[in-house]
Length: 619
Image (cartoon, rainbow, N blue to C red; front, side, top):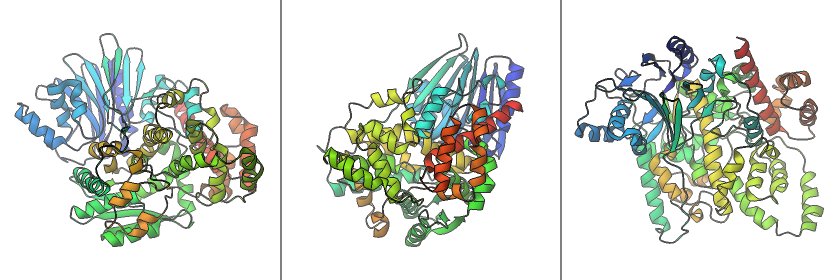
């Protein structure tokens, strides 16, 4: 696990100096080692968190005659299988590192080596024979890669903040990306919040040629749902057995490590299933969770129940408001790019806590997207029934009752869910989903938003399949996985996601919707398969999001920071939002008249991040 960066083209001396600066900005991603080389006017750099082949895995890495060089962030889980094939083909290996498979694999298969990789990765490869640079990212987008084409230069790095060490790339905020951020609470790839800096998309490669400074993007994989319905499927019990087998093998593949590892355990079905497979595979399992003093957000009792059931060595951290206050000054660095998901805070604190004991942690991310686990899927199904109620009753009875519900700041409170439900229930499915998930969904479409193209590509699907794909192609990549990568790597911890292993994803995509959402029963097959593996109470409990008590904290320990960060003078000076509207949102929330937690955190996170961006420019 590393932070990687590089510059191809331009002034060699300036490029090498820039790579040094970029590496320095990512020490947290790789505190164990640094490697920088300059070959043929290409400068490559990396910061290494040593996980596999601790002594021999130094990067940048090259092939036998030094004609191919590579830097990689991530892990190739099937590298031992690929190594056997490559050795049989005549290649010689000098290390036990998974990264070396990339240089020999490129020699053997060219850029099509990516189709053979099972792992989480982002890498950059230099082919000295042609001078070309190949950038690649894993299928689901677990590991990030940012790049910019600046004249005759290609600049790339694992983090946006590394690219911003180059003053030439600080070209201001992209207004379309800002609109997408306000609508979604994240910036969808391929854009970044900064104009001119892009993200390589999941399942994509970029080939850059020095001869004419051109680049070609290639999609080598994308998720596709099984649309054949229930025909020709196995029986439920047989599917349950297949799920357990594929899950166990996916976890087994992701246990490769030369350092201690553990598991994030929330008490939900996904992380609990991963922990269960780890215990079934043998050995002592260390599990880690966080709890809250606010009981509506606290899941620690469920995590303890699972830990006792599985016999893990369990550790728990209770989060207090003061921990967040201490973290606020570090938010610009932690966020890297604006992210309106406040759960990055407990994710980071959990990662920091876990890092005191292990260097790698497996988690349950991806299960909700693959198996229709979010309550919004149930809400979409309910919306079909709701819209059958005569309009006069909806307008004259239901909506007035919902508006009169008292404001509660508890996690996923009745009034919060009911008000968002009626606000979006009558909209088309994609618009409805945006209204329920985002902070300012009306912003979608402004300034040529990329979201409209994404939505248009899904119109032929069944409405619930549209929602599943939106979650998988937008929310999972740009929120859930970004949060995990930023939070864990800021703590110098490698986070792995076995539910997004190639084999498990392929299995889940092949299941019809009826195996995922049956009536209003979410994760139907997954829960059925875990009977007898996990406690019944865990399988029956409703989904609860992983968050922090933002609504209360904005009225309490974070009140002064909120008033400072979103002060009218500061909002006016930054020039992105209407000061009067922001002040109204703040006032309504602080007075208790409304729960504006989502909108306020989205604005708060952006302004905190932008303050760091401005300081970088002045520095």
